Image 1 (tube, helix red, strand yellow):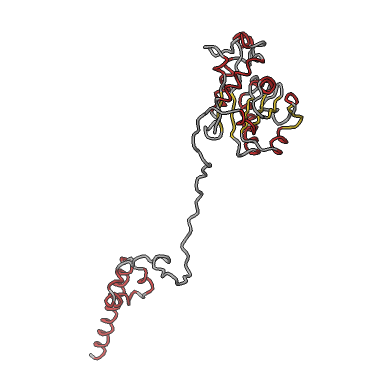
Image 2 (image 1 turned 90 degrees about the vertical axis):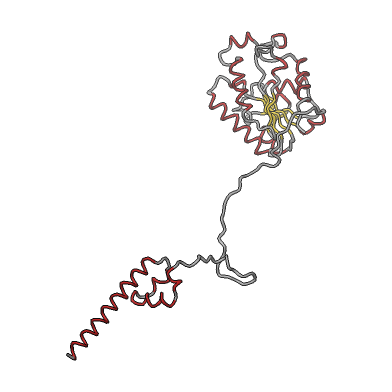
Length: 287
């Protein structure tokens, strides 16, 4: 009888221990509080009875939320790194205005035979002319401007001087080549000019068109090809530091052909006509 009581007592203790352990396991699994994970299962019921908040998840505490001013902390607020979008200075659309010849004191004209003509027959102010007959997008940095008196390469001219305005007109002489290659060469030249003269206003001058007779007889240099390349040139202007200038309306008829009365070869205007081009430039300055 005496042994039966001991067995019953031990059995009761085991049953209670098992029930406590099972209860503790259930509480640990159902609770969102990570603190219960460090308490033995059998002791969880007793811990919960003493502190019922153990059944709920504690509020998250970030190192920098409750930091007291003036007290050093081992934690640092994380720094989120991001790259702000680059904004060019003064990206304001500007409009053309009438200027005087003094405006061109720091101007550089770069181009083919039409630029040579402007420099010879209608020089404007103290502008500098870097022109060569037959110049193309491919050769602009590979030839000297012997036809306008500059026996230097463009790289040297742009490196040794500072210009406030640069007028760029090439494209017609290479119309027979691959269009993709032509555009690539034009952009390479333009980007190099911008790199060497980052503060200059750049004017992309449209190529002067050709007469009807020249257009219908030339497979490559004709009205359609000139217009097409000029339209592409215009897409590279942004109207705040790169501008597109098209003087063709001054010299072309209603169908877009260069007026035959103004040209001696179907592609170039007479010397006396360049003065009208000069007037056009004076009416299209950017202040």
